[in-house]
Length: 230
Image (cartoon, rainbow, N blue to C red):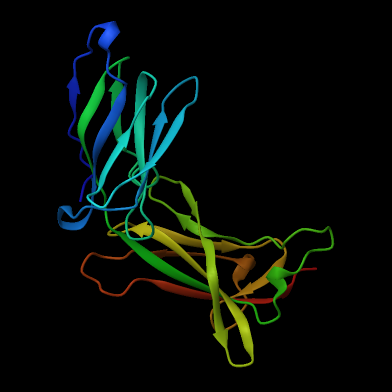
């Protein structure tokens, strides 16, 4: 699905009766279903910097009021189910407003995401301990996108094992479907292994993958923290 935009601009009224500069529209997802509680962010391109935020309602509708005149990119954060067009597509909806104008009927149609699961087994809890110089151990974990951009994965919790309730840290990251990607993991502080515990060459791994539309199974990966680097 593609991000689409439909805008009808209202002509500015005389100064004494000018409308508030605003943007109004709807966020939709799969089969044009309204997406509620999505965080919509209007980012003004250029200087001075200006950002406004609002949330979509139950009908997917959103509205920005009292915006300055300018050119705005519209980003949308709707959890892991959909992609933020400002991050992955690189082509967010753009609205340009003059003072007193209103953009109505803006349609933000989101693209479904695939959520990959990454488990980092850490039986010794080394990633939660501080290094000799007083910082958290380095762990670089994320995805390289098709345009050479890097997207970091973030921890979402732990998975439990008998006798060790925090034996693995679980990371999630929402990625586009039908797109060649590379999962990257590396560390300057801990020794890394694969799911079976075999040491990773050069203490890093970069695995190519993609989630094809129609494949019901999202991708998952597992790694092991083997110890501290000297």
